[in-house]
Length: 313
Image (cartoon, rainbow, N blue to C red):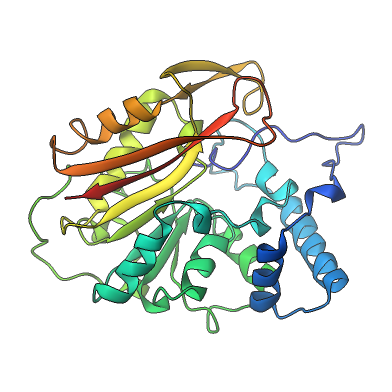
C-alpha cells in the first residue's frame, strides 16, 4: 500500500510531542478477550501497560527518507488512537465467507493488504483460517515488527509472511487486467515471495480496509485494478473491506485527514459501478456495499464509512 494510508495529521503539544489520550484505549469485552488470548497477559492493568509501551515505541519511529509520505505526517493516528487493538475485520458482513473459504477451498490464499500491525490477520487465523495460507503486506516492515512486539510473537511462533512495499509500485505489484481463466502456473510458495506480483490470479480473498479513501479518484481506480489482478478467477473469490464513503459520489472537504485538503468519496452506487463494468466485465462480479454511520464522526463531512465486498461469480 502507499505510505499515506494510515493516518491524518497528529496533534502535538508545544514541545512537539504527540498528544495521547488514555481514554482512547478502550477495547470492548470481545477485543479484550482476544488481546489476552493472543498476547498471553491475563491481568487488565498489565495488559494496558504493555499496549501503552508498544504504542510509545511505535510513535518514536520515523519513516525512511526514501519514502515520500503524500500527506507529510508520521506517526499515524491509528497508532495514537489505539486503533490497533480494535476488532475490525470480524465486524464486516463478508467475514464469515473468508472463514468458509479457509475451511472449504484447499489452498485458498488470503492476503491482508495494508495490514499495519497485523491484528486482522491474527484474528482470522484465530478463528480458523489456515495460518500457512495467509500473507500480509504494508509499506513499512516496522509495522510488522511492532506487531510482533504487541503480540509477543516471533517469525517462528507466528510464521506469516510479510511483504513490505508500495501497492502503486509496478515492481512490487504489477497492475494487470483481472483474469477469467485459471493461472497457467501454480501458486507460489508464500515464504519465497519478495513482491505481490507472483500472486496475480492466485488469491482467493483480499482484505483491504481503511486506506482506499485516502487516495484521489484516479489512484482509487488504480488500487482497484491492482487488487482485481491478484484475485483468483474461481467463483467465490472476493475482495472486501471498509473505508470512508458518502451518500453521493464526489470530492468532499476533509479537515479530519488533510487539513485544508479534500477527499474523494465513492457512494455505494458508484462503488458498485466501478467494480462491476469498469474493473471487471459487467455481470462477472457481485458487489455488496452499505453505508454505516460513524458513532463519533471526526467532522460533519466524514460521518459514514462503507462496508463492502466484491465477489466473483
